[in-house]
Structure formats: C-alpha cells, structure tokens
Image (cartoon, rainbow, N blue to C red; front, side, top):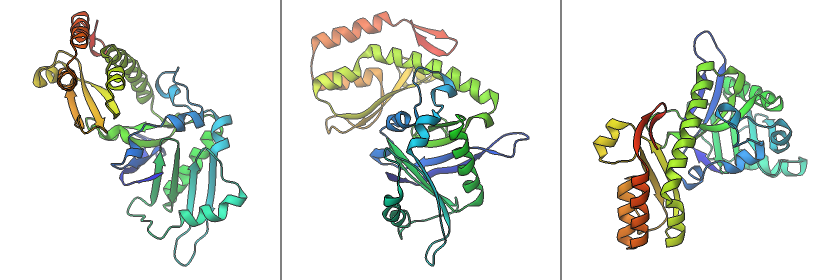
Amino acid sequence: MRDARTDLQLIMGEGDSTLPIALSLGFDFVAEHEMGISGIRRLVGASDAELGIERHRADPDRAMNHLTSVTLPKTRSAPECHVLELSPRRMNDADQASWKKAVRRPDIRWDKEGYTSSWDERSFRICAIDPEVVAFLKDFESALANGNAAVMHLSLSPGNPFSRSSLGLVVIDRLPGSAIEAMRESDIDQRLLREQFGKLGFDEVFRSKGIRVCACSPRRIDADQMASIGTDYPMNLWVNSWDERLRTGWFTVEELQDTVLDLFPDATLREYWGLVHDEMMIRTEDHGLGLS
C-alpha cells in the first residue's frame, strides 16, 4: 500500500442530512493509485454486471472475511487511533503485534483531516483520530456487514483527469436519490464509451507492438470540445506510458493513431483505422455524443 495525501475528505450529506455519506481515502501521484481497484472489488464481491451504485455494492459474506477493525490505545508517542483495513489475508491475533507496530510508524502525519490512508489495487488502510471520522468508519463497518456499503472511485474534482483516482468508502442508503440516478446514467454512458473505444483496438495494438502502457483510458467530450481540439471522435484519451517511445499525457484519437503509425508504419493498421472511422458516424445522443 502507498500513502494518499490528496483529496482526503469526509463527505457530508446535503440538505437536512447531518450524516456523512462517504469518506475519501484520497490519492497520490504513484503507480499504486493508477492501477485501478479490481483486487479490492474481488475481495468485497462487487459485480461488474450491475449498473450504478449496485455495481459497487459489497457482498457482506465476502467483504467481512477480509476486514480488520481495531482501536489502538494511546501511548506516550501516539494518540488513540481507530484502524480499518481491508486486505487479502485478514489479520489474526498472531499478526497483531507486528501489524500494530507498522501502523504506529513514527513518520505518520495526521494533518488537519484527522486521519491517514494508504491503499493499492487490492487493499486499503485508514488510521483515524478525529471523532467524526472514527464514527463514520464504525458506521461503514456496520453497513458493510449488512450489505449497505460500497468501495469505489470518487470524483471530487470534475474535469480533473486525476479526480477519479480517489478511493472512497460509501454508506449507500445515505446517498441522495439524484446521485444514485446520476451514477446509473453515467455507467450507461461509460459502457457506451468503452464499446466505442474498444472498436479502435488500441489495447491490442499496444500488446502486438510491444508498447508498455499502464493505462489508456477514454474520457467523454462534447461537440464544443471536439471542435476545440480538432477531433472527429467524442472522446479524449489519457495514456500513462511505461515506454520511452510514447509520452504520458492526453491524446486525441487521431494523435495517438499517428504516434503509433510513426513508430510502426503499418499499411494494414492504417487501413483498418480508416474503415473504423468511416463506420463510426458521429451523431448526438441522449448520453452526449455517441458513435453509430
């Protein structure tokens, strides 16, 4: 696990609600926070077949088998803190001594949030001293045991390409109905976007050409953005490259295609992308701009 230092936040409900609905574990600019959370989703039994919040709902029978929850007493050098950890191997009594020592490491910083977090693709840990955060963690644990919790990416800064890197713990029945409906609509649009992106075949091209990338992810853009950056496609691509031949950054579809073809001149590939472009007639749909 790697520490997260950005976007740590206890997210409160809106309107008359005074209860927090989620805790953002934040992120940092490290590879461990850019590898997705597929391992965590497997541990908690989340289902990719579902849409919206149901796609993130944890299965209590699976999730609780991997959860460790403990309050560490105050010492001369450290305050009392509540620790919640999800990991492939649940801590047993024999593990506790060395584990507690690791949690109590001397370089820990509480800062203004009153908690610290660490996570990676298959595990997370929160250490909290703030009473509100501790109370939420206990509520979340109870919700998890009752099938009312989700572990998912959160977007605290819409438009920020890194905003979805924040990991979040959510108590589902505290979410407003508008947020639940928006999540469902977003998932429908994301499935359409992934289908459109898949037709371009970049993942297979990278594998066949030996180009190592950590991520190549599409982001939906509207007609004005398309015109501004000069692309025929309703998506922009974020590439996180491990290959010195390919820069990390944002690309239009055309820019990434040209970059690959400059590295590997391939008439067959160029012809294929031309056919895909011709077949993808761009039109306006209910969920943004889609490709026919």
